[in-house]
Image (cartoon, rainbow, N blue to C red; front, top):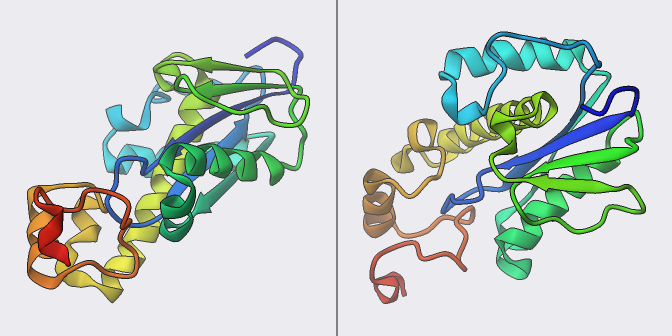
Length: 193
């Protein structure tokens, strides 16, 4: 974090999923925030992510989580949808950042706020790691709710990622209204239609 500058970290979750929205978070942490577990959400157990979520949400100077649904993903593509979700999360911050750190290598200007993209930034910067954790835990929670509606797809376990079980369920039951139809849902896409 740039000392003395209100800096937001941004990250997304669910970019590679076959179903559900993409979620993004923006987090502004205090300059002195530290936690021994703070790391890329993919490196943490589900229990630790959920515990850290509560710590981040109570300690952050500002945080916001936003999503872009599968229909909009299909309309504008997943990269644009991920960036749009990050912009929406930034829009929702109570504190307006003066600098933005973004996980990855692609972003679009957000108003006139300077930004830097950082590949694997969620393992290098606390505010990006915090955004990674919030985006992942909020998305996982959302997919568990969708699982209640469509339990045969196992979204409480695979969270919409392209696992063998998820693809087999698509093959058996067909796509749901939450599937991303612009994605390759099966190895032989033509079998869906």
